[in-house]
Every structure is written in structure tokens, then in C-alpha cells.
Image 1 (cartoon, chains in turn green, red):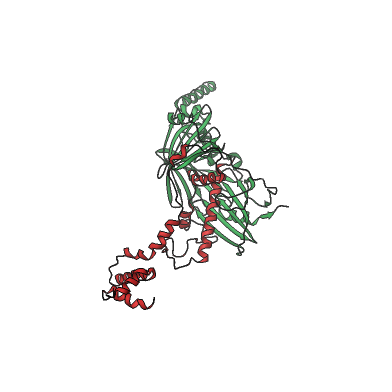
Image 2 (cartoon, rainbow over the protein chains, first blue to last red; image 1 turned 60 degrees about the horizontal axis):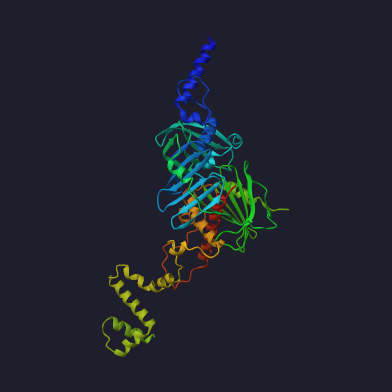
Length: 336
Length: 176
């Protein structure tokens, strides 16, 4: 009897695989419960892990809008996989043509009226790349994942998961993902006061079994030459030290370089990142007499924080709350 | 020059027929400017100016500004197909392109940022600094008024922030 039940269970799982060929081919975690209904409750973490995998492995075309501050920008992303390599085409839908194509470790930028160029970059730079490359398992130290409920985004059944920050030094997020393909459909950045300060939302999502033939063609086109940024050889590279950065963040860059088109003198530069956001910290000397002054500019989730202290100017740019920027800025010391 | 002021106003009122004075006025640029200002005043007082003529005063300065402005060429030059003798492209020129094309990656434009900053900030913390110069963006163009130092400082600060923001975008693009 028990044996029979097991067989029935096995059978229903196999039919489940057949009925959903898209998800089955990607090896996404399937609910191992004997239910004929497809959408069985996973844990929030499992949903997020599925999203991560789906975003990397599926062929899809996404139209979305981005609302930061008061500006709304409609954009398009076409993603595909060719022989295991991801290709992503991105384009602004309004205004002048601005496009980019990322494939095989290079990203090329095309803009109306300007010479196109490429940069070497292995890091995914498409819209949901940050949230879909986050280490959710280790992220539990700083975030709590809570399933909020189901809804409908871009005509698809979606589930909302809140990534609630455990401290005041990072924003919280609400991720909406498609229950069918597990692709992300909407990402809200939430401030401590529970306001949506930045939102990316899909308008249309089309998942296909095969890659869009047009971008498959694009992958064979010659791309503009790759530019290399000259490395500055500065002896005292690590002149400054951060004595505090928010938990979960790591220093990913620490150098001195010149700002393009502006200053002749180099600035000290440190980048910290927690996988979701990357924050730039600039330290430069200033003649300005104003001491202990700070200015804050915020648009959407992006913060521009400036602090003057004893002939030093510290600029912090990134998607972090003011509290975090303040604490990082005041922890800067000369390295011994 | 003062003594002609009376003559000027007579001229405007069509009460002057002394040819010498008219010739004098025609030769003196200063007087001509004054003449046009008087005319403008008259128009304004008679309510005939419908706002449009007010620009007379700034025409010269605007023309000068236009003449001084570096021509920004958004069109690919026809000669670009001809390769230069050597293959070296000035590095700074390249940098300029980065800055512009950074918008592809969704660069936040500072000019709009300055205007929209009061939208969503946490009211519990430090007040947001207003960086829009007094008088706003629509300050009249005028050569007579020397720009105040604070305005200059703000402009410089904005430029610096914009440069930092662009650098931040570039750093994100080349992040390993």
C-alpha cells in the first residue's frame, strides 16, 4: 500500500515536470510534495534562489519602467543564453537611442551621436542583476525574508517577498516574482520610514524556449574595441582606512584615480559592496574653510553625501541610508 | 554724453530736427544703446511691449555668449572614415565619451537631481541642502550684474558632484 502511494507520488512529480518544460530544463527547485496543483508553497529563501537561477538561465524579453525620484524611464531588456553564455541587450525606449549589449565578458555601449565603445566586464549589469546575484543564504545575517502574499504584475501571477533589513544601515526591499517562471517582476526599495524610494517594475514579460533570433545574431557581430582604463601608479594607495562599514559589506576597490573631465588632482577612492548595492567613497583635500559641514542630496534611492572635516572632503555616493553614510564618513582615518 | 539725453528724448518724441545731433547719435554706440533703452521704457510705459521687446537689452550679451560657446557637434563628421596616420586616440577624449555614454547605464543626471531633491527624504535626519541658486534657473542674462561668489561656489560644487556621480557610474561599469 505504502509502495503504491509512493508510485503515485512519483508519477505526479513526473507529470509536473512535463507540464512545465521551461522550469524543468533549468533545474529549478520543485516542490517535493505530492500535490497536483503546481504552485505549492516554497520558503521565501527557495523562491529567491529560484529567481536567481531563472534570471540567469531563461530566454526572456522584459519591458519595464524605473521610477526613481520623479522621473519615469521605460526600458527594454532582452536576455538569452547561447551555448551556456549569457547575452543581454538593453535599450532605453524613450528619447535618443541608448543601447548596450553584454556578452562574453564584454559590455558595449551605443549612443546616438557618440562613438560606441566596449568595456571588459564579467559582472552582469542588467536591471535586476544586483538582486539576482545576491548571496541570499548568507544574506540572512542582515535580512529577513518574509512572504507577503500574492498579486498580479504585468499580467502575471506574482508573489511578493520582503527582504527586511535587520538594521538601519541598509534599505529593505520587496521583490515580486513571477510564479510561473520565477523571474523578478518588480523591485521596491523601502526606506526605514516604509516609503518606496525607488521602484523597478515590469510592464511586460515574455519567456521563450529558444533565444530571440535577433540577439543571437547580435552576438556574432563585431563589437567596438575594448577600452582599458589606465591604472594610476600611486605609491601610497591605501592612505585612508575605514574603521567602520555596515555589516555584510566588503571593500571591493581601494585606489587613487583622477575624475574624468574635472579635477587634475587624484582622489582617494574606496568602493564597498554587499552584493546588492555598491557604494563609492571619495576622499580629497579641500581648501574650503567650511568645517564640519555636510550636505545631502537624494534622488530615489541614490544618496550623495558630502562632509567637510578639517580640510578633507568626503563624498559618499550609493544606495544606502543617510545613517550608514554618516557613520562611514566619520570612521575615516589616515592609515597607519 | 549727459547733454544728449535731453536731445535723445526729443528725438524719440519726434521733436528734434537738428541734423548734427542726429549724426552725433548715429556715431555714438553708447547713445544708441541709450536710445533703444528709452524706446523700450516708452513702450513699457505705453504698455506696447508685450514682453517680447524686453530682450533688446540682453541681445548683445547673448550674442557674445553664443559666439564664445564651444560648438558642440553631435553629428559624426564626414571625415571620420579617414583613419589618422597613427592609431593613438587621445585618452582624455575617450574619457569624455564615457561620461556621456554613462547614461546608458542609467546615470542620474545632476541637473534634474538638484531640482527634485526635496521629494523623498527622511525628515528625521539632517535637512537637505538646497543647491538651486537663488532666483532659480530662469535668472535673467545680464552683463551688468556680476555673479555672486556663492553662486559660483554652488556651481563649482554641483560640477564636482556631477563629476563624482559620473565616476561612480563608471566605477560600477568596470567593477570586476
